Length: 253
Ligand SMILES: NC(=O)c1ccc[n+]([C@@H]2O[C@H](COP(=O)([O-])OP(=O)(O)OC[C@H]3O[C@@H](n4cnc5c(N)ncnc54)[C@H](O)[C@@H]3O)[C@@H](O)[C@H]2O)c1
Image (cartoon, rainbow, N blue to C red; front, side, top):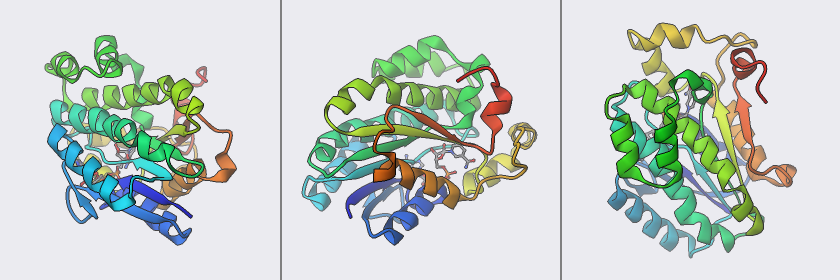
């Protein structure tokens, strides 16, 4: 049994993940803007620093897992989406890596999105800036775009960033993967459904299994990726989307 950080733990997928991990006997440290062990805004450098310092103190510098699930929705403002969904998410992984290195069979999971596969919206210069860790340049590249474009790009960049870290993290003995959820019944999806433009588009997403996911179905996949049954799974993006990606991009692996 280990100590696992879950960001976005106050709601939706993060809350379900926390519940599942605790039922499995793990100790979790929840991070969120409210109702969490560590209350911090992961959109700001100060908030990220506060979170890291508090997690280090609460864990005695030893972690066995990290789940970077905190995120804003495609209806949010593009700069805020960039701050939280890419730079906040990746900062938690990178900054907590030394704590994971002290853990037992450590593993981390980032939460991307099936939205990342809508590559017609991808802005290569934004991805490049994200992967270079240049938040100022990424914000400049997204300035004229809407929240949905920022969301697609940030989630695409996050999946690429996980893959780019495979050599280093693997050599350090820390597994790192991403989950790409499809439509999942959380407050974020409720808000999306109510949005005048994004609502119809989201409802129109083809889902071969014919229904949205329950948050605990995402938690199950995340628990698998963190655990010993996934001992050889590393640098992967696992789509947990009822088959949506297979329909949107049938020719892509
Ligand atoms: N629900 C879906 O259909 C869906 C689909 C694909 C991907 N996702 C991704 O899954 C993750 C979880 O989403 P969810 O559906 O559970 O959403 P949610 O809105 O229910 O939960 C997100 C949580 O993140 C927290 N958060 C947001 N900004 C934060 C910040 N600056 N600092 C700290 N915490 C912050 C919120 O307070 C909230 O508790 C997100 O990264 C989201 O993009 C969700």
